[in-house]
Amino acid sequence: MFDTGRVSDPQKMSALESLRTGLRSAGSETIRNRTVHSQLRPLFPQGLTAGVHTLDGPLTVGLGLLSGSDWAGVVGFPDLGAEAIVEWGIEPQKLVLIPEVGAAWVEVVAELAEVTETILTCAPPPVTDAIAGRLLSRLRHRNTAMIVCGGWPRPQSRIRARIEGWGGLGQGHGYLTHQRLRIEVTERHHTRQHRIIRGHEPFTELSLAVVPDESRADEAAGHEAFEHDSSGIGELDQPWAS
Image: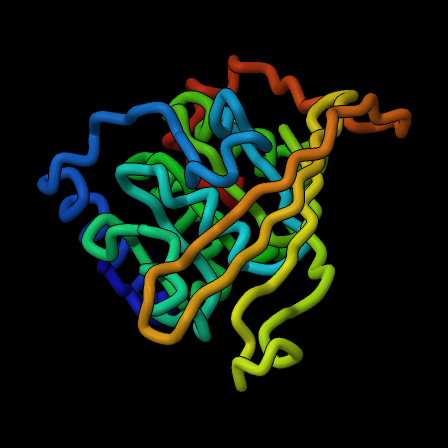
């Protein structure tokens, strides 16, 4: 696991350059399709498309979306533990973990887009439409998917997850054995819904079960994917603050 710790402004350029060099030397330039955990694939049957997806709900769902990636990055979650990562089958040696990013969020995410398939990130600081569009162009140019735990204008999909309940104590186990989640994914004008039972015994492998709901049309407006002008690709090397 690559853990860069806190990225401060004086260290920003050297840290990002070291990250780029290290990942490229590890053979991360071959980008494959972004598959997700096998139990989440009914929600993304074609995998995660390049671009931005938003997540409203438990962080664990975002980790499940990373588990099929060859290389992935996690940005801005200082309390994220290794156990949660391993539970989803993510290989720690193929994960770039940046617990605290500060004001360098845009630069860090832009660098990760160069060398990873999927990025899971905290909510970004306020960015201009121009910077958001330029970052989206880079993600698409590098065929990278980014999952934002927060808002983003016109994302590829909106993922909403809610805890429906817990189980285990009432059955006499003495501890919680499973969690019931309901996940809804809205892409363009269609919504897919599934229920997931996320359970584990102490020191044993995570187990999942999916109960599908039929797809339905989403009547709400404003869910179209953002089709940014790809001409911005030629400006990727310009300073992000400009």
